[in-house]
Every structure is written in C-alpha cells, then in structure tokens.
Length: 166
Length: 186
Image 1 (cartoon, rainbow over the protein chains, first blue to last red):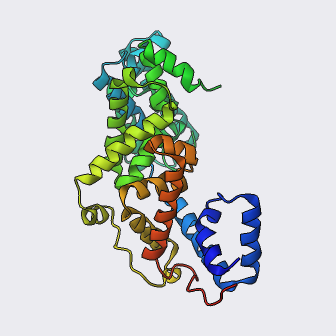
Image 2: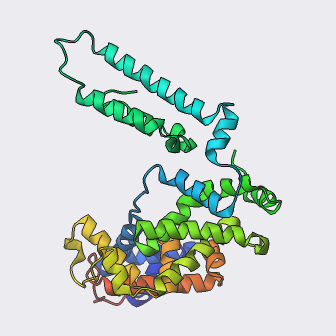
Image 3: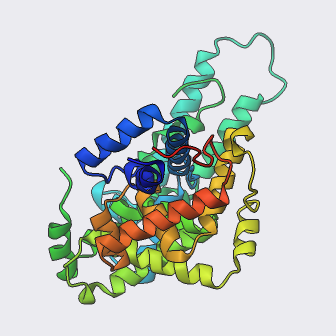
C-alpha cells in the first residue's frame, strides 16, 4: 500500500472499523514507514485525549435534589420525606428527634473519648463548635427530606469532627 | 438485577410514577455528562438534563419503542443541547467554558491540561453533526448503530461524519503529535 492510501484509512483504523485483512495491511505498512506511523500515533493520541476529557461531577446532594424537583414539576408521587416516613412508620418530628438523639449520642461518645479534661475548659473547642453546628443543620427538617442524604455515608462521615472517623 | 428498559417502559406507559424515578436515577448521570460535553458549563448541563427528563416524560405517549430508551433520552438531550448552543455564538461558548481558540502549533509541547483544553476547544468548533458524532463516539463510547439511532441517520453517515470530524480536528490541531507530510510513497 502507498502512504496516501494508508493515510486515508488511518482514521477508520484508529476507530477500530477496518476489516481484519485491511487492518493487517495498514499495520504492515506502518511497521516500515516512520511518517505514517507518526501520523497514526498522533491520531490515536488525539482520540485518547478527547476521550479523557474530564466532566466535573455536581455536588453529591445534587442528584437527590434534582429528582425531588423533577417529581415536583411533574406532579409525581409523594415526596421522599413522606416515603421515608412510610418506611420507618415515624412522623417527621420523630425523625428529627431521632437524628438529634443520634448526634447527641455521637457527641457524648466524642466527649467521653477525650478522657478527663486536662484543665477546666475555657469554652467549647473548635471541634465541639463544629459538632454543634452540624447538629443544628441536621435538626432542620428540610435536610431530613433528602432520603439520599441518609444513604450517603460521606455526609455522615462529614458530621464527625475533623480527624475523627464515624 | 437491574430492571430492563422494556419492563420500565411497560410500567411507564401504565402511568407508574415510580418507574420514571428509576429511569431518572439510571440515566441522570449520563444525560448530565452529555449536556456538559456540549455546554462546558455545569449549571447549563444540569438544567438541560432536567429539561430532557421533563420533555421525555411529557412525550412518553409518543415514544414508539423502536429505539431503546437510552438512545431516545440521548436524542432529546442532544437536541436540547444543539438548540441551546444555537442561541450562543461559539466564541461566547468557548469564553464561558474558559477555552481558548485552538492555536495551530506544537501541541506536543503543551501540558496535559493545556492539551486537553485545546482538544476540547477544537471539538467545540466542529459543525454540530460532526461534534455530536465525536462526543457520542469518542467520549461516550457509543456504537455506530446507537449513534445512528440518536442522530436519526444511517451508520454510513455516522462513519462519514466521524471521518470528517477527526480530519477537521487534525487540521485545527496541526502539529499535534509528530505527524507531518508524507515524504515517501510506498
């Protein structure tokens, strides 16, 4: 095969669309032609770079919120919060209480884990403040309406003070 | 085991809202990613993916099932993306996405990120059908047959579009890699 014939086939070859005998002919030519081999390599690199183009992921909470919004706009079914209520046979206020109790337990465990105070504490530490802020957030019923949040282990991990695993 | 598209369609046509939620859960990432590749903007991509699902739900009664559910959803999203893009000049799109105009030259000297940006900008500059073909084939990894269904054309047209698209990309990115003129006929 001549170079111009091979180069006309390189895009199809890079796309994996050549029949086996033709592919073998092209490869045979490439083995002995630096110019065509370089062009083939450039095409593959171009396609590889295009394929690797990154797509930024929306924040983790986005998908659940988007589904909720979509369901609302389409007038579909019950909210995720009411589905959660049905699954757990609890009222929303009870769920909020449950979450608060969970976090209080977490806070108690955290404080107990620190052992005796080395000296009289002058006030809450930064970790304790962060924990209290998170407690307020979770007590917000709006957050509880996102069922996926509760399924999201990353969020639960983020509720722990920095440096402490949940 | 995942529910098949056929089973989902039966439930959708019966007006089962929970089936639509399954569809959204299954395809929301795909449609967002496709829309992002066209818009290069996360907010626009999220809006377009949402709009695609809205339109799909409202058009369910007109979906004849001759194509698969995902190619149908891709088609709706793609049309939205192309219409969205029509409203914005290419320069504005590239600027919004932080993409420079592709500069012919020694791209091999660029860093990985710069090279990726240059290739993305070159793809953004392609005519709509070629751009769609490259995105669906190279970035989404779809078969020629699936792309033909999405673009509602023949597989031959898909292959031709792909050939011209890549040739155009090579021209825009001349100097990319070590390719050059052929100095020997064999």
